Length: 395
Ligand code: UDP
Picture (cartoon, rainbow, N blue to C red):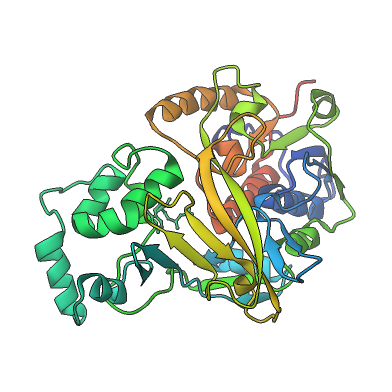
C-alpha cells in the first residue's frame, strides 16, 4: 500500500489514552527503518526490525578499521547535507556532527581539476584567467549549445550548459562507467545534481547544513534505534511467517524483491570496492574522480580525509568500480531507464494494492535518494501512520 492511499484505520494521538497500539514489523535497519521505528516506538507501538545483514545502518554503515584506526564508510562515502532544518535537528539529536566540506577533485588526462565545475576548473581547463562575468560569457557564447532549449537527456543537459569540451572531459567517460550506458539514455535530472559555478566555490554541495557524524553513521543509527519498544534482529532475512504475526509492515527492501521479482527485475548498479592501504597521505583529498574512460574505476576515496579531525599514520583507500547488479549483489543506484520505469509502474500498482504494507526508502520506492530526503520521507511516513492510520495485514 502506498501512503497516499492509506485508509483510516484509526486516529491516534500519543496523548490519547485510547490509542490502539500495534505490532509493527520493519524490514531493513537502514535510515528509513530506524527513523520510522523510533517515531512509532515513541508513540507506544511495538517494533520488530529484521535486517538480513550483520549490521545496522544499511549502506551508510561505518566501521573503524582495527589495523589503522580509520573510520571506514563500508559502502562508499556518505556526506550528510541538507537544507531541511527539521532533518538537521533530528540527526543532531542522535549524533555529534562535525562540519565537513566535500571538495572533490578529478583527474582527466595529465591534469587534476576541481569539481563541481567552477571558475578554477574553467580557467585551468582552457588556460585562461577569466573573472566570473568573463567566464560566464565565454561558456555561454563559445561553449554551450543554446540550440538545445529543453534538455531531456544527461548529454543534452551537459551540452546545453557546459558544451562539448567540458562534457567530454568531465562527464562523458565518468558517466558511462558509472551508469553502464550512453549519457544520451540517461535523464537530465542526474546531471542537475551538480552545480556549475562562475566563482571559486568548490563546495560539492550547495546545502546550508553539511557534516559527518563524529562517531560514524552506525553509531547514529544505533542511537536512533535505542528504544525499549524496538527489537532489532540482525542476520535475519525477511520471512512471510514474521509478517503474518504483525498488524502492519514497513518494507525498505527492494520493491521487486517483495513480489519475488514476479514481473521481472528492476535494474540497479552495484559497486565493487578494491581496498589498498598506504602510509601517510595517499592522494591528499577524500575523493578523486577519474573522468577518463581508459581508467576502469570511477574514483578513489581515501577515508581518513572524511574525518579531518582525526589523525592516523596509516591510510585506507578504495578504488570504486560500478557494474550491473546481479542477483545477490548489493543494489546501490536505481537505473530508471525507460524499460525500468515501465516495470516500476507495474510494481507500484501491486504495492498500492498490498494491504498492510508501506513501501519506504531508496529500495522500497526505487528512487535515487540522498540521506536527508530518506529521513524526511521516513518522518512523514511515520507521521501519516500516526495521524491517519494504516491498513492492517490480512493474515
Ligand atoms: N558525474 C560525472 N563526473 C564526475 C562526477 C559526477 O560525470 O566527476 C556524473 C555522474 O553521472 C553522476 C552524476 O554526475 O552519477 C551525479 O553526480 P553525483 O556526485 O551526485 O553522483 P553520486 O555518486 O552522488 O550518485
